[in-house]
Amino acid sequence: MKDTRPYHHGNLKQALLDASLELIREVGPEAFTLREVARRAGVSHNAPYRHFRDKSELLAAVAAEGFDRLTESMTKAADSGSDALDRFRLSGRGYVQFALRYPQHFTVMFEAPKRFDTHPEALAAGERAFTTLVRYIEECQSAGSLPPGDSKQLALLAWSMVHGVAKLAIAGRLPFSGIDQMLQFTDAAGHALMYGISNASGLTVRHP
Image 1 (spheres, rainbow, N blue to C red):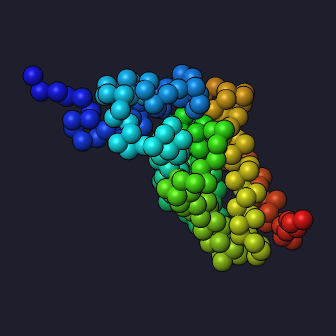
Image 2: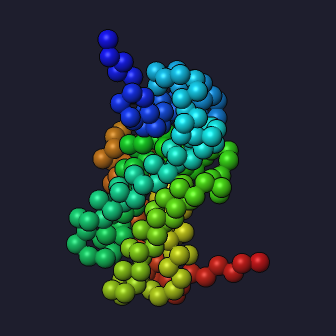
């Protein structure tokens, strides 16, 4: 009988990522072993080491996949915007949509005990996501919808706001009954943020 395990179909890496996400949903990003991931994926306990040196590298791969999906979600949401400011606002909606759809990725990306500074793939994916947000802000600045200034600092401000909404949403801490209401709240928070930035003289944070 032909063996139909994922490993023999040539998608071992994705099978391991999927198995790790299943475990993260159950026990969090730290309380599992590569051996258990292999068991869930239906492969030998040595098979994960064909792609990952250790659990940290596996989590970094999950984070990289998550950041790429985040970028896609932000871009897809923003593409329906009618102008630069609308695209900026909708990118925030895409951020929250991503968090609600992929909460395990979100947890690994932002709450894993260890950062991914030594994992180039995860770092590059994270930078692409942040650069996407910066681009929407710079488009608003070019259109005169947002004041001139350090676009990266404005991006940090926007990110902090929308990340807080996303975190509260996936933790079930917002008093809303469904995704639509959560996204409406996201839109309202985005409008408030944009109004505040538009009427500010600029944002400057002095580093010590």
